[in-house]
Image (cartoon, rainbow over all chains, first blue to last red; front, side):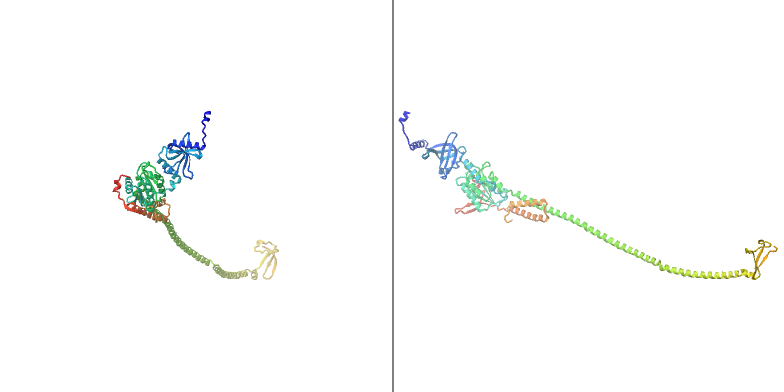
Length: 445
Length: 83
């Protein structure tokens, strides 16, 4: 303690800081460091501030705008980087930090990281959304190919297009497909194709290559040019296993340039036969439909014929019945007439007048007869009377008496005596004479 | 019909054939559809026949204009192995 006191040297903060700053900056003028980024932020100045850390320590880091711009990728939280920088001390805050001049992602290559970052950014922006994907026309009127005018790719595409769809017009927009100017050329070609608007589909093609070779197709400028294209874009970059940003933005990704040609150029013969087939189906349909309606019509006509026939039959029957009715009517009329005549006849025949006449006749007859018989009877009777009169006259006892006969009667009972047996001797008798009567007695018998 | 694309025409044709094959159309409608179908199939055939077999190379000239030149596949395009 005493020793310390004896050699005691008191620094001002500034002095001390100055000493430390010198120490640090001299000791670490340039240093490689690796660590993980955290607390990443970019204030309005545009410089990048973050903390580099590992499991046990951390250090503030800064990368100025100018240096950041040179990076092929973007610094971000969680990223492990290897950075080259120098240690610096910021006196006002007594804080030291590393000022990075260069950084690269640790592990994956910078290009890979840049790819992933751009991919994520564009995806978030919606450039890959299926809603923006246009449909590739089935039969394009013209195909635009943006690729290198030399090499196998264009040759393959042309061959395949012409094999599948002979005569399909193609226009080629030649571009470099690698190198620094490639991205710009490609995006310009896309713009030209859209400006011309003469093609219905664009094939953006390139043969296989390293990630570096494919870099133009992973560039933002090409991605945006594809996105801006109103003409559908089919991307065919590299081999089947290669995926580029262009593939994600494009309306359709073809695994290879040849596949792109096949996707874009339909098999004409197939389409032709499909078209023909549809036409035939159409014709067949209408023919069978017409036949069906014709059958229906025939059936309905027949159904209509039936009532017509029925009507005709009914007409015949009606006529027949009318005829028969008339005949019957006439017959009945005749019968009735006959009956009427007969009845009239009978009536006339049986007329009470007839009867009356008859009766009158009869009566006349009867009258005549009656008169006759009466006359007859009368004459008979008068005859009889005369006869009887005569008889009577003859029988008249008076006349008999006149002629001298007498009538003897018993006395007093006046019984006519016609035999002597009826009287007895001595009996008193009355004898009637023509004039006068005498009484006598029986002396003998 | 002025700006009918091939696939639109083919699609319509297919739709018409489906409708006709359903057999649910009136005679009048199906005849109309048939007429339309034949028209579409003619259109499609015509589109398929159209062939001018033209390959052009579009080259930008110094003044920025685009010049169309015939593209010959058999020349340097094939001989040059570089992609």
